Length: 363
Image 1 (tube, one colour):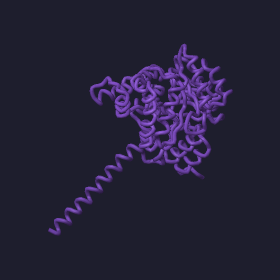
Image 2: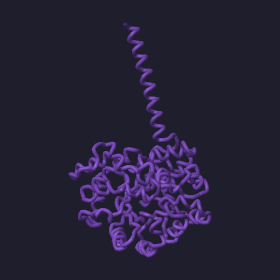
Image 3: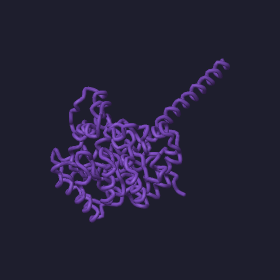
Image 4: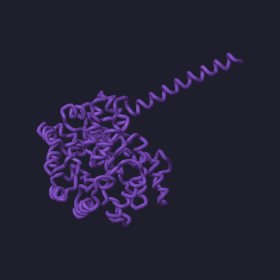
């Protein structure tokens, strides 16, 4: 009997060891094996971060019947299709998640749930962006939407701030002006609205149309980033920098113009790069040529982000693992990308110092 107990104990130990190794292997594939184990996401769209579980919670909270008979169908409705051909096709995926954030309760809870979700994935600081003008279908004003989002921030322990998106489009100039005025009203260093953005169909509504809007943002002292060099070419980035953007959403297409690449480098502009998104929207046709690491090695300030994690089925851990496995991103390169993210964050110096300590980035 004693020998049987010893044998059983040995079998148990071996089983546990194999299980631990298996779990470590799975974790390695998810998180990557490099430097990054905690993350900063500077480019995360609220409506693009709605997962199946979050959609169900938002629907239940508001008594909304979801247009899906099961989780698999709901996931298909929330996710980009495999045959997505362009950014314009990609943008159609936002209809359902936006429909769940048309009340103060829905928007507040969306911010809370999404912040908690990414925190559980290792994100220690995020800038969550959304367009207040897209949340007014059921009677909320833009200001109501901002206040609801701010309430959502209070319900999470994640360090996070909000970026208000103006939208590329036709006939919405007044709405964009209102978004800017509200950004000025609610602007803080931490724990709220810290910047504005310009999002939407870049190729259809070019950056050159928004010169006056960003001239006023600069006059107000409202920091801004601009989606550019994604669906449109390098010239879009050049204009964004001319307007005063310190960060560029995506910017991947500067690889088409060495002069714009040099301009980004000389001005110290930070790129918010999002590999999975760029692959799915066809911003980059051949991902073998994805320039993130070459930009980084050339001295361009690159950061790694998710963009629309719910729609794309990604996380920041997956983004880092992808860059490691496909391109051989090294621990030192990951450390540099995280350091760039801290430097470029629209937040206070005290928060940046705390993030550097947490990430082990202090010299």
